Image 1 (cartoon, rainbow, N blue to C red):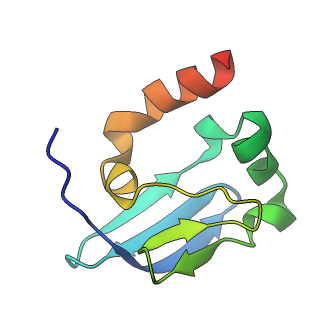
Image 2: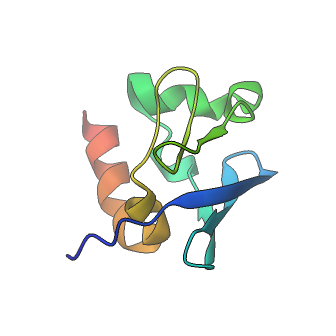
Length: 93
């Protein structure tokens, strides 16, 4: 898979676990993170108050949380292609 080096330039919380992300190429994606909310790093995102602490790191162009959880922007851009394997991996860890 070709890595496209996308950057996230805007974000909006749609609901608990769901974000609307704006990318530097002009595209936007609605990303449901609930399927990957497992384990020590991403499990905390189940807490709505913690989930709302998401921020945009303009230096690296991605979203992050205070516990260090973050994502590759290209993965988020192609979320539908990756979510199943990420969810399976995190649930089995």
